[in-house]
Length: 109
Image (cartoon, rainbow, N blue to C red):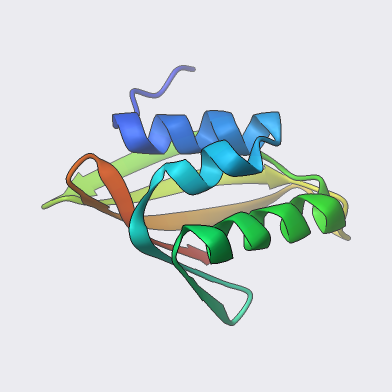
């Protein structure tokens, strides 16, 4: 099943799955934010560091399952496969899109 994702989210998923931490960071607005595992990251350098640490720790891949859009916000339901107990899990990535980039991302199980 193929899901039609907005450009910035599609680019994020592709970069995430390729392991290209620079490309992941470039999907975000310069002062974009991420909330993941009760931590907060702001700006591309912090997002790049978060991505690198996460990839090293978990070696995760993201498989989109469904997306819901509303007023520039998107909730992407994904299967998250990684090196942790219980993998794969279903997670929800909550995106706010701003000017063709990701303004914020919150990851929740």
